[in-house]
Image 1 (cartoon, each protein chain N blue to C red):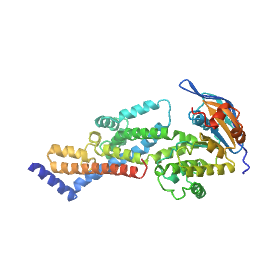
Image 2 (image 1 turned 90 degrees about the vertical axis):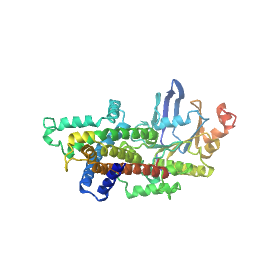
Image 3 (image 1 turned 45 degrees about the horizontal axis):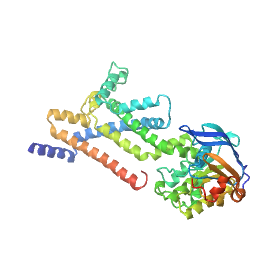
Image 4 (image 1 turned 30 degrees about the horizontal axis):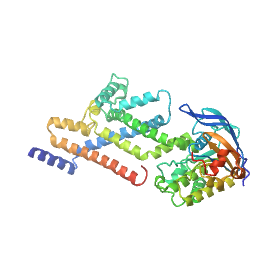
Length: 241
Length: 235
């Protein structure tokens, strides 16, 4: 573990409306525990929306989100996000990394170049540096997307269901990378609707249902002794909404 | 039919014999068209990227004007540039009228809206595609500009070739501001018009064939580029 100070996410009176309908309503949520916080819930519950609001991709209709006491738009924030569907540019694998990399000068230095190659090798794309990113397989695209988010060494990494469409082997590899990054001191917030994956990764968990936070507990309490009936039913596989 | 065959035969004779008069006209046409095209790209591509990325007051108006100017009649451009560059005009002191510079200015005005408008459309598409990516990775604006430029490089090359096609085949504006002066401002299109009216059909036909070959080469380049882009996943 590094000595990085644990980032604190604080959400107050958050509301997100679309076409007059409230899609997400969070009175208060505080995430300041170390490790991986997993957000679970059925499809359409508002998990991805919450992540997009924390990253600033969507803007709230009301309320505020603060990271370490600062607004999310503050330039000092160093969080990044892995999107559910990777968005890759019509460039090579290496260029997809280098173009999004916050470099010191216009041209990339030798050490920065080495850093990119190291991260790509870590995710298993070290031999595909010059391959067009659009021609990668689904799993490779997701690995590249993850590598691109890790390059800036963020203090918070938001991960939105990265393994929902990929095979079990790649899923395990991506989970391993995320656990490694967490051990390095990056706070991970991971969205999934897969209970088993949540159990494998989480140090604490949040349950969302119909745009509201139903439960927030550490992993043992969440899985062994859930407080809400909804969480109990969901974990038991009873809820099919 | 024999008349056409004779004309064609003489025309091919001029081309294959590297007739100095023919190739002097071709060389001037290429020089003027490429210069105006490069100058247009230098200004129109950054403008297209800015219009595609930023939403500012009056932006829609600028886009509307550029789209309208895409169909600008060349003779109107020729007339406007003529008025500007004529001795009594505001830019008359430059003495550009009836020189290749005047033709470059006229072609610049004709190509500029095409390049900037098509670049703007492409960048708008990319901006909506990459909006979430840029926020998710907090990519700086300067880097976003570079990404738009690199990502759309093949589309920009196609736009470049479209601009070249417009410039090289243009006749209305360059004949007004260039005056079709022998050895000075005689371009392929203006020479074809003049030699046809004079009955020197072999020379007009030779220039016509070269113009067609240039158009064919440009189209072949665009076609090959599209194939390459699809094949190597840059589509």
